[in-house]
Image 1 (cartoon, rainbow, N blue to C red):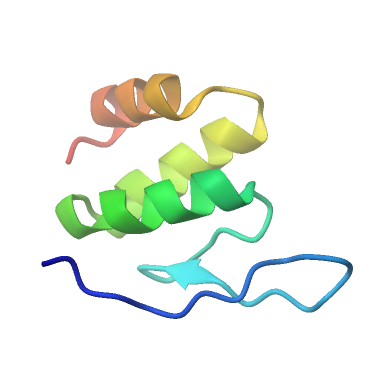
Image 2: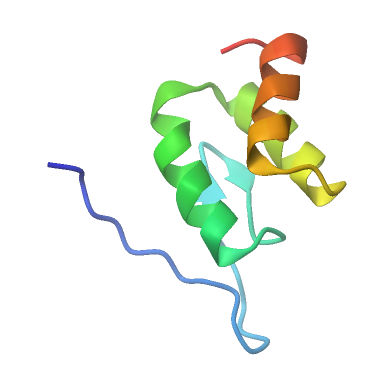
Length: 74
């Protein structure tokens, strides 16, 4: 069974303080945030940071993962 956690999303101008492995993910959509949280169990903080940077530049989740795997690794 997957562990549950409480996430406060950035909605309606509320303060956002979501971090996954020390990486701020507030700039991403809710769907990307939840996907990245689950994804982070298998990857390093450098990998997560590379993915967030890529997604902020307009890449999809899958493409940013492929890029992060090439640049940083797991």
